[in-house]
Image 1: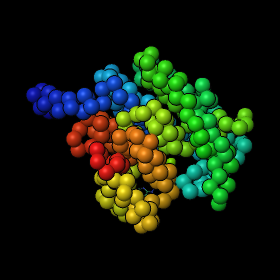
Image 2 (image 1 turned 120 degrees about the vertical axis):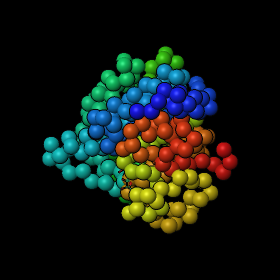
Image 3 (image 1 turned 90 degrees about the vertical axis):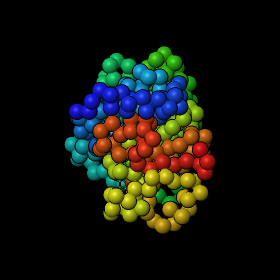
Length: 287
Ligand code: ADP
Ligand code: MG
């Protein structure tokens, strides 16, 4: 246990950070182990609630990959991924919607002391998507977000609640639901809301220079370094949408975007309220 003076010192060191983020929106994508492990889940929720109570507007966007895979397994459907994205046929989409908008969303909403309000991409047409078409692969009902109607999220924030958002989208040209990678949804929302920061919580220490070496975290990525990184093939699988999302958010005007380790308790507080931060931060040349 640390003594009271040291504790007070640590708290007061957070002041410049609290000032910087006061009344600002921070979008947090919540996924991976931090969503499954009960202790980590409590730590994430208490961080979110604390930031909310000190005047930082946290918006939680969640995935639910492991829960979706578990439910698909129960129904005898195989999960398969193309470029880090879940191939989504009609039946998979039904399950994605049931699990994300139902079970996972409502469980999360119930946690932060009655301050959570659950929303999905269909609410107020929050996320409007078309079928993702990269000209090479078929992803089924995976959506590419075309527009974000974020007024509903602003309203929820204004009323003093924490928006908890599941990453499904409504069709822009049809009445189908689309599965959207939660990193992508968080990034698009951060851009639309003019968020100050985007945080992607995941199961790895950050972007690794050598994916087999967990100590090789790249702490900072200026956008100009990207072509070099992409050409060096260090980015693969689920890290592809993550890096794309951080870059896109920063291009949309979000000050910086970070990929941080959700396995570390209170990593959100470390990233937002300490000088050191954690994980990999993407930003423009000068911040
Ligand atoms: P999430 O559920 O948080 O979206 P994903 O599994 O989709 O997590 O994406 C993170 C995964 O990306 C890591 O666990 C790792 O296996 C993979 N990955 C590929 N290349 C890298 C890299 N250069 N650095 C870190 N992780 C990488
Ligand atoms: Mg992923």
